[in-house]
Length: 424
Image (cartoon, rainbow, N blue to C red; front, side):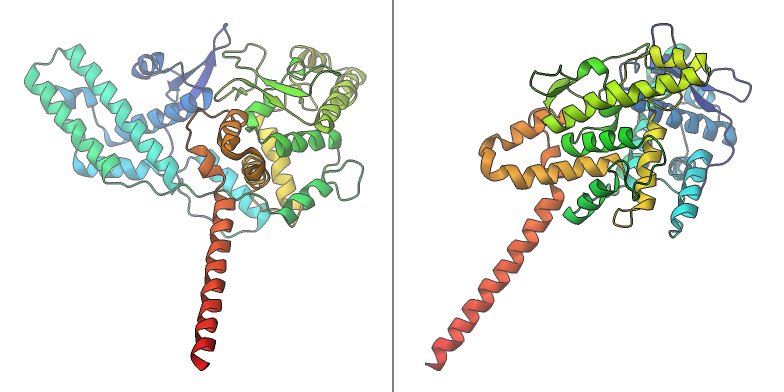
């Protein structure tokens, strides 16, 4: 189900410092007062987290507006939401927005796949329900303070919050997030063969070398898409020194003018790369990246030249701006549609899982007990993270299947041996 027409929408406001701050606006463009104070204490979160929380807050206010619920009046009486209202809100939180609905429709038309149920996945739904309770808890407590409610009404509101948490979070069990598959060996070879520049099978009419280096970087490092898109020219080690990529945290970075800035999600670190990837990156920066500026000059696009010179991000678009997240997704969508061996929903995360599977297979005997520690460092996870086992799921499942088959073969062999002994 697609959400009804929204009364409120999210706008990310960029301050002079470069910081992005979410504002919830009504149809006339006037910001709501309460969310401003709520996000004031949430502003330390990463952009994607802030954006997701803001969309949930907008959905909550849409629901309250649609139902004619005056939360301030409810809290004054020691009340929040009725059971049926909380249930309806939970259903609303699972609906997708019109933008997502349009994206899914276009994907379905291109891939000719079976239409999917127009709701968000269970994992996302769980996040939305928890964020809704968090926001309503903050908002009700703020209203209590503003109204200077006595203890009895405050306790009643706390009881209402506990009931709401039970209805939205505790009773609605989260569905497990589907495990995105890694590429098989055959799929990996098909991908690498297809993206080689200047070959007839290459699916890109332009920017072939950029896309080749981009995919190669994902394949070799297993980095997140925001980490690759956030790389600057200075993050690549100089020629002659050990080949590395430096992942740097740049909060509120003014030079990153993208609608979705490429922020480092976890730990800053220096990642070793092969001389092959290093040479490809150097060649792209010195030759193909510069061609973008030359083409803009030839076109007389002064604004494009200014955009190109305003930043040092390695991967750029044809208009001189840093390669955006949507531009990256378009590259992977093209690969998924044009290469039969690849899944239709091919994404950068599939290469992150592929890297982890290859790391598991190749490093178990060589690294021994250091394997987990090295993997955590390269992937940017904290010590003791549960992500190591999570990302190596495909290898674990395959090894489990092989173990079961071997166990069955051993059992059959013993059974035959026992029968042979009985005959003699």
